[in-house]
Amino acid sequence: MKKTILEYLGIVVGCTIVSVAFVFFINPYKLVPGGVFGTSIVLHNLFPTVQVGTFGYMIGIPLLIASYFILGKGIGAKTLVASLVSPFLMNLISTLAYPDKESLHALDPSKLAGGCLDMSNDLILSCIIGSVLCGVGEGLIMKCRASSGGSDVVAMIISKFTHMKFSHALLMVDGVVVLLGLLVIGMGLGTGNSGNHSWVLSGYSLICIFMMSQTVAFVVSGSKNNKLMFIITDKNQEDMRDFILKELDRTATVIPSFGLYKKGEKDILMMVVRMHEVDIVTSTVNEFDPNVFVIVTDAYDTFGERWKDFPDKSALTIR
View 1 (cartoon, one colour):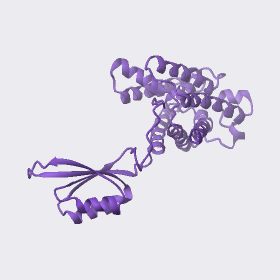
View 2 (cartoon, rainbow, N blue to C red; view 1 turned 120 degrees about the vertical axis):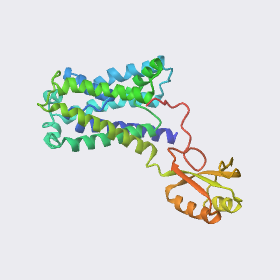
View 3 (cartoon, one colour; view 1 turned 180 degrees about the vertical axis):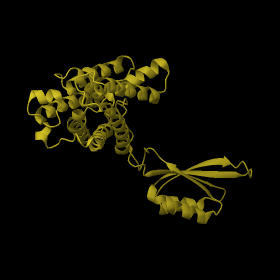
């Protein structure tokens, strides 16, 4: 129960961070970072009396329903909470941050928070702060075993019916959203044309998409501190076994193998260690076997005893 409460609290905190990022650093400068809220920003420039969060409801909820009927993905309670809380907080914070309806509809940065957060002349800084904050919030939501849904649902549907790779479909969907932003905002088809060079906002939008994805990956998986090691040796492993089990306090899996060049039997020890343990492991096993061959690579994620708990089976996996 305590874990569940903390996860729901984490989801609310994550949604709050995402909402703050959009309200103060993304929406006022008409950046379009893909996804549901990127599309909402484009639509707001066509219909400025409708808030960005409201468009988030109008797009996000049908996408969740579509994922249920078309993809057969159950809508988890945590994902439903995240999908409902983020647009609500975005509308609430926006209403509080602007002094009147006129500035709210225009998303006028000079009126935002009394004008003390106007970053119109520092778009790159606003882009960086907004995308990093948004990535932190989204990453926190995912770490709490939820998802805010979004363009990934559309990408999954496209992938299902066209057999396109999911990554390519997702890139295409976000690209279409950015292109819509270029047409509506950059080329003045909406009400939010910010000047002769507003087309460059699409470039900032691409920066936002990249930085958000990198930040989400860092928050969810860390800095890839875990390393996967393959130790290939033809010597007796007793010394290595004692070192790994007793001194290093780790474990490993022995995989029998056959050397192609010398045509002799070998063993491959596969183990996961922390990054700071790599040097001590490589130097020690080299003392045991001067001809040892070691491969070190990143372990994207590690589940099981002494590492991370396995994810909840009932959690929605759509991201």
